[in-house]
Image (cartoon, rainbow, N blue to C red; front, side, top):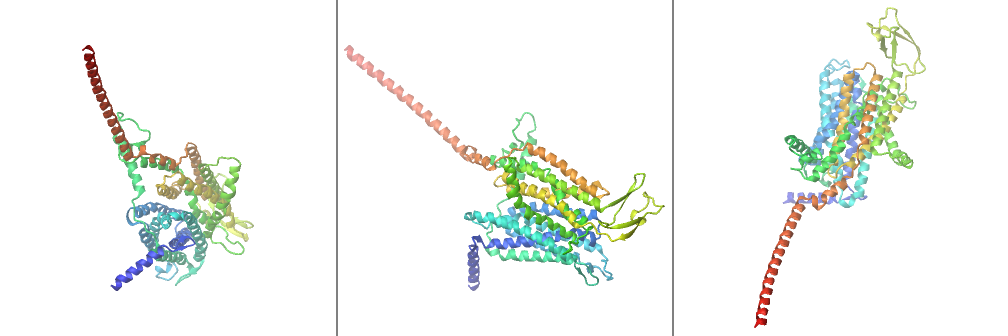
Length: 607
């Protein structure tokens, strides 16, 4: 009896908390915002130092470190599709977030453990004796993180939106702005803090760069994120799974393809659109919505190339920064801290673009459509890689003989330096190793190339991101049917994943000896894709999904209404026919009666 009373009291208290509001907002959304801040801090903090962990702890070369880094990022943007399916079809958003956050947290903890060099340093010389253990742990950790962060990505924002009532539309809109701000705040702080933690020295037997601390703090933030999110459980509005629209779309497309293949004979009449072959099984409204989605997804085909360049900020550009001087006078910037330039510039440039640049373009009566903006954004991103290539040429020095043969000699020299290079007369470019054969004598201590020279390429890349990414999301939302926003969101995330896969393919296939040449290759590919996208955009016709959906809301598009209308017409026709038959019979009887009366009168007159 007592237990039942306690349970009832707790239930009533939970129900009471659901109605608690702070400044017009449900109290539950504050737990969600804090959770998102901690989760984004955890993810971006770990990712900021990841490529350096590969390079200097696991001792991988630049190419392998870059490849594994982009493989991980690609997985992080592939798993959201799985998370959306699980949440909508099986567990619901709340349980999906909780379960995958546990997986996520375990992954971060495993990653922190993998970076402890004393773990396998049995001879206490400061060098791990079994690097296989560290590699296996780190790969396991990254796999769990990719599953966790990607799986919850499509759920958290939507779950926050579920907490608002119909009369809180304004608060819901503001919530998404606050939510986006928490993402950027977590990203910015983590990319500042975790490189500082990495630069510290720690260890039991020997002091080394503290990667365990750099990974451990993000792991702790993920634990906090999980605890905070679960703490608000009693206040959440939890909607049951309602079926996944992505699966429905895939089934509809599959049926259309299968049905078209079955009726490929010429005796079957052609249809206006190949998706019309799904009409036999699926509602016309759904088919029309799928057509709109496919129209936008077709435009997505060239987009991965932008992300191919964009995500190299965390790999190639970070490795480039390791060869540069980070002394800014008042402080020394770590190579991985240069990534903070991107979120700082975003916070500055987004309002500038929205309130200054775009209105100015509009006043000039230029039709700067969303697709034109995206094309410009891709081109600007390509120019960022041209800037990176020019900077790389300043970092490298090459030796060439009279026959045109050359070898690359790398040395951090920089401005204001003076070196004497001694090349022996027996030196053979074809058979010698440049670095071993050539002696460098330092005459004047060099001032190395400053990291500040990376700012122009970061500025160009961020400008391209603001014009491309923000506009792309806006365009996708405006062109998506009301119930398929998530489908296009999944498609957008997929372009990011494919972009990171392209890095692996191009970097491995090209095998260019010079890094500057690889930068130029990526820039050239994006310019080519930019031209293709511009042509595709020219032939794209903007649509209003709401208007198209409204047409199908009319009675003539409703199968039940069409049946009722048809039955009504048939009944009216039958009634009309009966009235006509009845009228003709009456007229016939009336005619007979009139004839009889005339005959009687005729008889009487004769009498």
